[in-house]
Image (cartoon, rainbow, N blue to C red; front, side, top):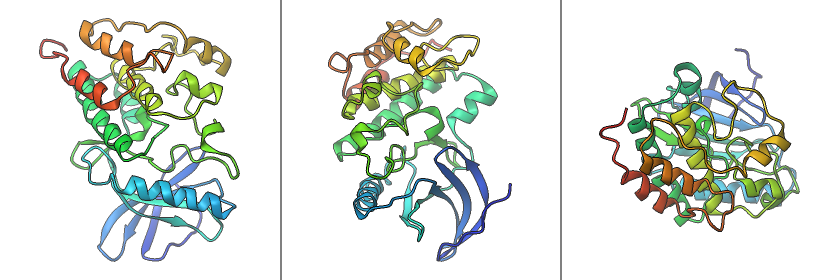
Length: 277
């Protein structure tokens, strides 16, 4: 895959690993320590000092979580001369859980539950540090070189367009995993991350997010918003206790939802999956 010629002091940029609507990820080599890293460059531009300060504030907060075993470490961050922000992250050669779902289908109950426990612990740590993720989904959970899973994209996940507040932007939402209140421009809260994480665990078990048609039919945003208000659809072949936990975390009304990531972690960990597939 070809890539634009760009330079970053201290790094040798080698190839494009992936490209999405808002960012491009490059494989690069950090010269000072001789390690391969992932360089994520956002395509959006931070035009004002306020936007740049907000980005660096979020990345600094995210960097404090780098020691967590289920958070992708942030090694460096900054803004290019053309005002595009970048982050330097641990290279995770296993791709994402979104890739795995696409190529191999749903995970076992135990594996999905265990991933949910680990990521919920990471989200709880983030919330304790005052950091919201806002875009938890299988595509943002990466598989590192040791087979472990870690949450990525803190700081870039919901970066607004210039001069738009985070609380009133929807450009960076992933509709299938976003909490219902996000479509009504509600202020982001920890309960929103809990909803997205529960929807992610559901997708790991089912192969698709909650409320999505079995035949893979694409839904309009209006249809999806309506479906987000539907009752939780129990998963067949899944322990009743696990369905109950996911159902509590996927309540449409955030005031009635299991709103604490630590409580979601503990509830998932308490589910007996020894006899499950």
